[in-house]
Length: 105
Image (tube, rainbow, N blue to C red):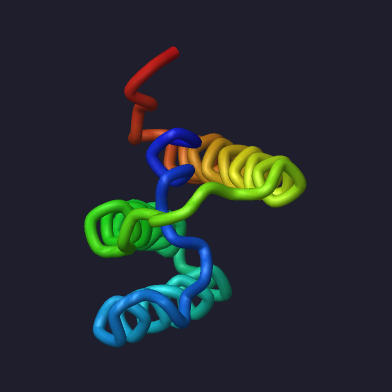
């Protein structure tokens, strides 16, 4: 997952306007579902996270320049944090929705 994001342009103002709008919409929907107390809400959260990831990988343009070492370290830290978030969502979703089985164990 980390490698899939490492080549993407990190500055959102450099992304196509349609991509920016699609990602903002997904983030708002994600935030709304995360506050929903319904049992199926975590399934919706998981689905939206996958949509967010796929949209980012497919639509955000690749970097056209080399990062400075400090920026590369910071990017790696952000990507590692995202990896932890995705892991937490996977774990939480499985815990709250026991009929879903993780793909790998």
